[in-house]
Image: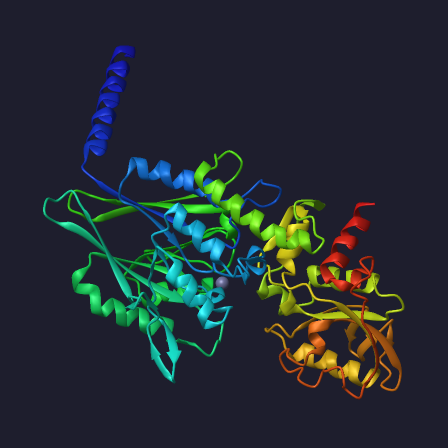
Length: 508
Ligand SMILES: [Zn+2]
C-alpha cells in the first residue's frame, strides 16, 4: 500500500515537473513599462526616506539591462508646482527647468500633459517643451493661438495624437504593435489651451489606428472616475497608466487595468506585458515598487539633482530660510495639501497656516488667506523641513493687519465660500460658520463693528477670483498695518516664517 502511494506521488511529481517545464519553455515576449505620475520633486522627500529621481534611474537601468524593450512614462504633472521652480537661476525663475533636465537625464520616453503643465504662461511651457528630450503624446489637448486650436509643437513638429510602439514578438516577421493615446483633465483653463471631450477623442484616435495596432494602451491624467468611465467606453484599452490622484491605486474595469503610482515617486509602477508565441497579450503583471533608502542613487543623476538643489536653495537661503532644517516630525500623521482638499473644504493644513498668521499678528481677531496660496498639491507626512513649508507656500507673501467693518468682513467670507473649487476659496482661523451665520469669537459678526483681521497680502490686490472689490482703498477698510521690511524679527514679513515659528511652538 505504502509503495503504491509513493509511486503515485512520484508520478504526480514528474507530471508537475513536466507541466512547469512546458509552461516555462513556452515562448513568450515581454515588454516593460515603467510608470511615474505627478512628480514635482527631483530629490528625495521626508528627510530622504522616499522618492528621488536618482533612485528611479537605478531602477530603470536595472530593468533595462534585463529587457531592451523597456519604456519609461510620466503621466502628467511635472513642470509645476515645484518649490525649486520658484527660485531664480541665471537671472530667471527656474519654472520647472530643473525637472525637465532631470527627466532627460533619467531617460523618460513618453509623457502626456497634466493640469499643472498649464500653470505658467504659454512661453514658459514652450520653453520646457523645447528643452525636453522625451516625446509628448496628447489626444485631447490643443493650443489656442489667434482664436484657432492646433496641436502643440516641439521644434516645429506637431505633438502626435497617438504613438505606435513596435517590438519583435515570438512570431517571426511579425512585430507587436501597441497603440498609445494620451488624455488630460480639463481642469486648468488657460486662454492658450483647449480641451476636447476625453471619451470622444479617445474613440476617434482609436478608430484611426485600430487597423494598424494589436493592442491599445493609454497614458492619462484624469480623475479615477473618469479613467473608469474611459475604460468602460473604450474597452479595447488593455492598460491605463494614470495620474492626478497622488495615491497609488490599481483597478480593473472589464479587462482594462488602471493604475496610478504615488506622487513624487514615492512609488512607481512596473508593468510587464507578456505576449505568447502567437503574439497574443496573455498577461500584464503590475508591480508597485517603493522608491526608498534601499534603492541606490545613480551617481550622475544625483550630481545633477544636487546641482539644481544648490542653485535653488541659494535663493531661499538669501531670503532667510534654512531649507534642510527639520521643523517638525508629524510621524505617521498626514497634512493634506492637495487642491481637491484645500480648495473645497476648511482643512487642517489651512487652519494651521491661518493660526500661524493669527499668532504673529498682535491684536488680531481672526486670520484668513486664499487657499490658492497652498501650492504643494500633495500630502505631507513624516519629517517636515523648512523646504516643505516652502513647497506648501512657494510664493510666500506678507501678512497685513487690516481693520475693517463687519459688513466688509462678511462680504469677504461670503465671496470666499462661493469660491469653492478655486484658489479664492478661503481658509481661516477665529471664524466659524453656523446656522446663525458667520461668527467671530463666538459672536455673530456685527456689521458696524471694526474687526482686526490678519490677511494674506495677495488678497488685497483685487486679483483673486471674485475679489475684485478687495483692494486697499475699499471704503470698508479703516486701517492697514504692514510689517516693516527692515525688521527681520517681524514674522509678518513672510507667511512662511510664521508657519515655521508655529511648528517650533508645537515642538516645545
Ligand atoms: Zn493633476
